[in-house]
Image (tube, rainbow, N blue to C red; front, side):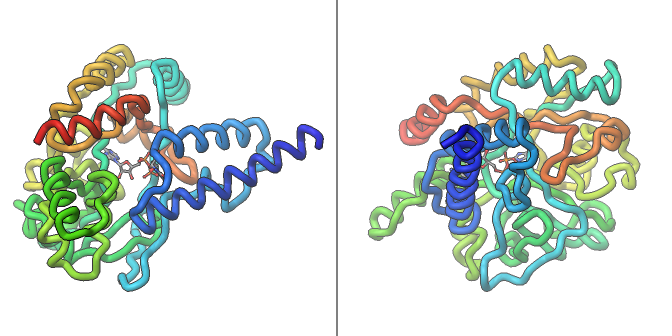
Length: 329
Ligand code: NAD
């Protein structure tokens, strides 16, 4: 077999494997591979596709966001797509991201770094200040209506401090302690434990009976406005997050505005060990260009914004992370 045939065969294998892993993770909330295994295969596929654009198939997992909508839920068409994030894995990747950003918008760029909460992406719509609809990301264009489940989360206000119409995006998650308690209860009841807090949160919110979500002590951090942040008078993402706080929406306060990529790297490094002290799981750091004008100039790929990227913590720490949960209770 020649090199080209081998490459085509490998691409087909990777497409099949990643699609299967993605379905288990996104649709069934029961992963069959570790995140590190999934990320490694995804990077291999991205590298082959970058060298051989003719091998990028429309249904390649590199071209699609997340999963699909579960039967039984009403579908919600998103007014603004809910996208994924590109990933970076080391300091050199972070510097490369910075170079691409500065090439496009100039050297004066500022970043905002946020913790990458490991849960389920949700979108919350408020009308006249009242919570009217909440949904999952789904395939990025169409998600599941999980309003009743989200209403059980105490950190989601049913009424904002201002009577405005706004869509906000965030991550619903299960605190580590709730996760350990839930798995202990499941063990006692002879039920299969959840693989990790992320899957437990996603599994809880994608239940048709809201009593289940209500019993699981979920929480939420909001990390952005859906659509045009400037429409609310904000010029930067950090201002938009402060505005969400004013509206009584819960944001994560570990965020940091960074004036250089050195500061970003320092922030990323500082969380390597510290993250085990948090009461919730994070799987990385999200680095975002702060100015909305710069964001607009950078734009989007089909799957993710060019103005943001997610640094993923190294795989060996995933093991420690799981041990931490067991030891900290
Ligand atoms: P992602 O997890 O790489 O990043 C996008 C998501 O990050 C957003 O949708 C958002 O919900 C979340 N996020 C958390 N905090 C945020 C913040 N502060 N700002 C912005 N967004 C924030 O993308 P993805 O497409 O959801 O998932 C891909 C990842 O999921 C993979 O890298 C892999 O680790 C994991 N995965 C694992 C398997 C498996 O089999 N184990 C399968 C599929 C995916």
